[in-house]
Image (cartoon, rainbow, N blue to C red; front, side):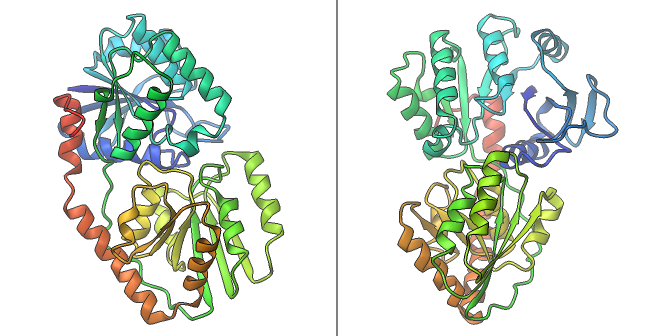
Length: 388
């Protein structure tokens, strides 16, 4: 069965974060049973130059997928690609992407040879995501509904909460073309890392947090600064991630300049996936007050490294609290954030090691009990129900 994937970014890129990682993991896990053909941009996020050693417009083997790199995707090139591979399913790795818009329009006009359309929005319908560039997104939703572009389309989401976000969005708009049964649930496929990164010594009154994500409004780095400035002690925050929103990055650096002297920031820039594990070597905790995650690969990776996590309540990882592997707090609960962060600062080594060991134990058991790969294959092969 051939799956045609339309994605803004794919390997060897890495700066796009979780959406790219989710797609790459899906391809590698399921590529022995499904044939993946990926059309994507010829360069990474924010890069002005294309990837080295690629030939544009040709199918190149990359792991378990054949990949076609194009600077621009036109109606003509999209039609030719579909005619070339005759896919059973066309998988859109975003809802609001211009490339997805093009595919939806052409599908509605009957120009994609009747291929089934599955849209993976990767958290784009969370309240936090919809609050960013609201006017543009509302205009697009109106356009989609006005021309019935979702006719015969389905969504693939990672969690029941993400499904609820989509259902609520279209219900609020009284969309007659949308049905909850069109939302299929199958978790992302994370790769469990075998080796635990050695735990750093934790001294009372000292802490090292790590923020590892895109520097964007959605990830809320300036929110982390606001919570930290209410804490005492010797605090270090390492910041890793591409600045894909330059205006927001400037705002964050200006906010960083106003932090008290007991808080030391270290800006490191982007990391490849293989380098992510080095970001956890010195860190005690992952700090991510995100405004929304449909999965949160960096959270999974932090737990694999045995690092407890401090998260907003806008992720699907609330179960870390009962496991003693971290905290999930409402973004509006400013005092709770400050007291929890201060507890991490004051924590001694015995308590920290117990928390870190709980993080690793939790993620190993969570991964063992999940049947990620088969659920994803069923989604493509059997067109499963929403309870898949």
